[in-house]
Length: 307
Image 1 (cartoon, rainbow, N blue to C red):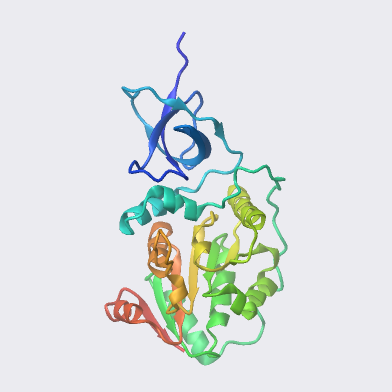
Image 2 (image 1 turned 45 degrees about the vertical axis):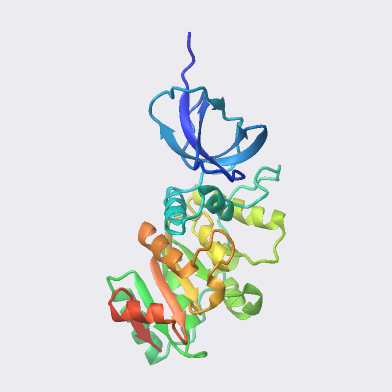
């Protein structure tokens, strides 16, 4: 009796050739977005299951070695990875390497997602007239994209906190990008004070184990249906989150939002695509917006607010 086999396209993380994915088989059903171990030539690699092959191939296939005991990548990130590969002319392997931490294959102590304490909440000080006007305009707008222009000290961060609190109250996760996490401890501390252990902070100084833990914590919270607030640099866009509802990019004009290594993506443009895929509200904050953001606001693709 022949065993039932399923066939899948898998994108390896270490492959540098022209092929975008390879066909493998498994004796069990595997969810799209699962991270697996596969043989590739004489080597072994991790890979992401990106598609189900409907018909049995006419060529011999190798078996998937192992399905990693981590949650599958959410469908919206699978769509984002496919878009980035095409839009930035980048190999799928390079994109997925950017999305995933390097230590996933290593044995780690697993932790069940728990609903953390809520934190102290948004500071009770009243909003200024300008802040209240802008907040009401953002709340009442049908547009997803907003350009928030205000000089340093005008109160942009307070609006970020208000919008984050509203997203969390409706079960939605939030991403807050900052140019250099080591240079903005005040922003981080404000979010951590307001929202407690629901905040996941990332930065370039994290060890491999720390990056792996944060990714696993975010993925476990997603499986458990628990929203999180991620504060960090451009790579924070790629953490798996439950029901992403808000993306904030502070100082959106900063050059550090452009990655200079392959894949050479621009975080603001990538966040705009992520907003489109998830219907998350996008807030671009800056004292001195770039020409691109001002042009998009002039064309009506971003709603322009002044503080």
